[in-house]
Length: 466
Image 1: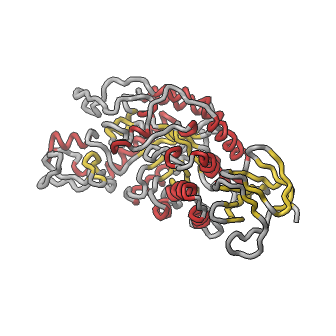
Image 2 (image 1 turned 90 degrees about the vertical axis):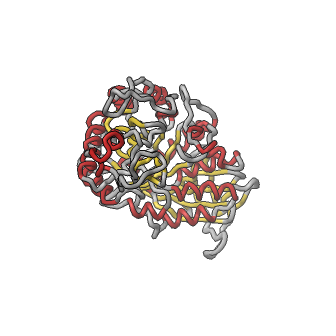
Image 3 (image 1 turned 45 degrees about the vertical axis):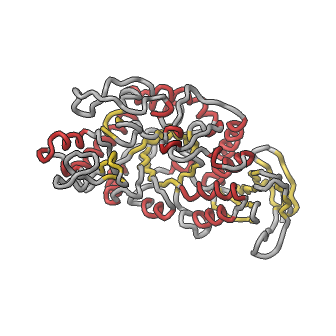
């Protein structure tokens, strides 16, 4: 079994607690000694309103941000075995997953194993029973001679000194087997296709290896094997977590910064440097799958990040043209605004009854279809062909197909003309017949290529002339 299906993904991210309009804080039922869950309210079905949108956008995998029982936002987990009662029951979510699979859409399940919430059942057991609790060794650095600002009567290690996040002891075999039991349940009940492991770069690396070994023989819901996608905050961390013994793939924060900064400063040098460093001939990720994004549940929406809204289509065009898996965060495909206002992330996780379709969505549909049909964009190598400050052309080539991505971020048209050498603006030129895959126009080039103002083109070589 293998995870090669990852390379063919166009992924869509939901934040169900936000999308489905769930209360921002979970209520408690103290008679429920396991996870204090109240009666489930079936909100998760709202995801089904998106299926037509997903299929029109050629999406074949969805990534569900946290859906497990939690205290508030999903990442302060109470229980690894149960859907958050604000979204519904396990059976409700299983029905949604089944419908997605029936429509050919894979499921990536958000999983955070580094820490849990203060409402996690084993942590509450320590708070209730103190030194008599049998779960003391489930958490890191429990010390009854010290205290925390929460005045629990004991100290515990927290994630980045946030006392809402007690860190698990992932060297404890009982904890490991408890987590593995939950994953078995997710596979059996929801038929998931992969795990997105939060802060994989900061999680116990021995545990990450155990997780890969444990999941290696598990079947994905739509075939192949269960994939592990790790979250990494910087490019060097990607190198640490993606290997034959750890994650199959990683998030790509470095490329996100390069796309946004290059477009905003009208300077493609950073983008070119990043793409060559990551995916060039000797690139550190030339044989690695990374997931690229323009925004997500933690990052201000791309339409607000860009200074010039007329360059928005360049960013989206790059997302689908660069090596790696493109990720669409729900709402951004129709230009939703959102930022981390007042130090809360809920502004990035809005509620919608149903999706919207507009001109931006039309454009994304076109480029997603091009990617779906183009082996060069899914698997191809990367090579810089032409570069000035505000203009750039790079190529992707695979399976006998070559596509040139030609961009101009300036407000003036630019003629890229052949220029010998290897320095600034060196260009061998393009010669022959080319199809522009977004507009479906055809061009005959005799060396020079015109780049319209604020544009991105996908130029497929149909007949190259020497």
